[in-house]
Amino acid sequence: MAQRGFAGVSGTHFTLNDLPFYLTGANNYYLIYKSEFMINSVLDMALAMGLKVVRTWAFLDRGSLDGSVPDVDPPGAKEGVYFQYWDPARGAPAFNDGPNGLLRLDYVVHAAGQRGLKLILPLVNNWQPFGGIDQYVTWYGLNSHHEFYTHPKTRDAYKNWALHLLNRRNVYTGVLYKDDPTIMAWELANEPRCQGTIERLNSPGCSPAILTGWVQEMSAFLKQNDSKHLVTVGDEGFFRRSGGSDWLRNGSQGVDFDAFLRTASIDFGTLHLYPDNWGKDVDWATQWIEEHIAAGVEADKPVLIEEYGWMEQTTRDGVFRTWLNAVERHGGAADLIWILAARQDDGSLYPDYDHYTIYGPADAPAVTAHAAVMEGKSGSAVRIAALTSAASYVAGSVAPGEIVTLFGSGIGPDAGMGATLNSAGLMTTFLAGTRVLFDGQPSPMTFAQAGQVNAVVPHAVAGRSSVQVQIEAQGQKSNALTVEVAQATPGIFTLDSSGKGQAAVLNQDNSLNSAANPAPRGSIISLFATGIGQTNPPGIDGKPAAPPFPVPVLPVTVEIAGANAEILYAGGAPGLVAGVLQANVRVPAQAATGSSAPLVLWGGGAQSQPGVTIAIV
Image (tube, rainbow, N blue to C red; front, side, top):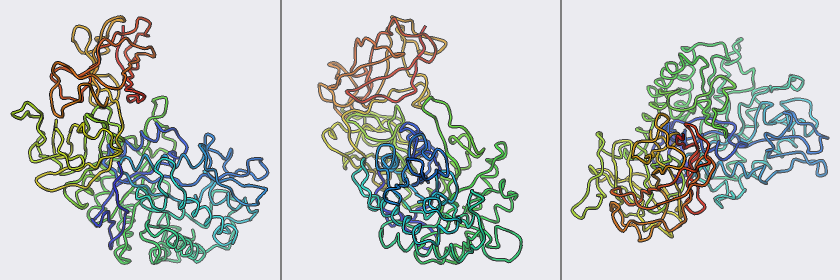
């Protein structure tokens, strides 16, 4: 589900498809080495918050595999994953393009593109974690952190890494990185400074002139080899405006925000904001934001607040509201919170290691509200932000007859409106001035409101590789999303419509299944799903199911608490629109009892979302 079009700049704001693109986003460092489930969880949460951009690392550097050149961040690999390593035979860094290497970054780019999210990718870290600059210095036996910026061998190694990424063909998409609009910008480094983490490598002799020269050389190099993407520095926004003792303003870190912003091959400025770590307060931080936006106005370039955080959870949302109001009040272009995390493979939340972590809208309502404000300033008033299954809320492919949910702005009426039937007894394709178009074909609609629309994917998309989706509201068309078409993308409806937890299941007596009302082993339950694909007889768009009930063409199987369940019926749900599957299954006699027994449905080889449960006694 990729939003086509490369990001650009026009004066002090970003653009997308030649329209203003004001954005809110988030950072996450672990996407490049964690599981697909954990990647998807973060990206889906970003969509749920209305975010447009995710910043994650495009580096993971280690020493030699034989240990002759040490890892500066032992053990070098992250859960077995690494991107670059020292090859003693060649006397140069080598690239790991395999499953425990850049294939991981391929998936992140692919998954973000499916969801219409943009990525900002830094190419090296200033700090010891993930290897970074000090790993380059160690590779070549140099003595100072700042030699990375000046030594011909480290400069060439950095350029080779950049070229390798630019010319890499993504295994999932088949697109070269330099040709992929999912990538919003390349970033020269994460927080480049004269000093790094390893104290023995922090020696005198560095100056802002050294870093500025490196920024000019490397940004021009990227532009020469990739004319489609934006380029920025990734610095923390430190000034060189005084000779006093304030390290944030005197150039002592080697950073000169104004000089970086004046560089012709730098498209936008960046700043980071951690008053907790810097011994500053909220008011100082607000002024820091305003000063940088003003510097962007002076240079006629956008400025991205690309990392910001506040440790104290009880005051965090109010602090964020103060800062983000300043962004809105002064015409700021964009901001990315540090750090958005989500569920781990075992279902627990990723640990809050640095005390800045948020896990979704409930942790930072100000960010979600701000995202809506920024969205409202971007391009057309009618805009699709995301498309997901209406059952699982997972973004990605669609299947014929699947009920989907589209999120966005200006896409429906202020007051929600439910489905209506036309004179032929079919669900209408028009609700309160809103239509959903799949390759131009209007689809049956089940719900419409200003920020959310539900529709049924036309059965005619079967056999296509992809379909273009648009919303037309009050005669104005939205941006177009291109979505892959699959045979099946099963999703089970849940009781709270979250896509997780207690399934929307009827017990044998037609009462709702719940922890207080579990289903006995051996009894029959009815579950409801969508995304099961084509049926026999073929589905009729918008028709409520009636005899002869359509049954899926693909085989359907159900597993309860890890045991295969006997299916007594799997077909159209009586009275519900074509595309809803009802499956009547017997709870296995050997199923473990409990209030959270896992429930999984397969349509062909495609599996429903994880984390759905029923109660068994």
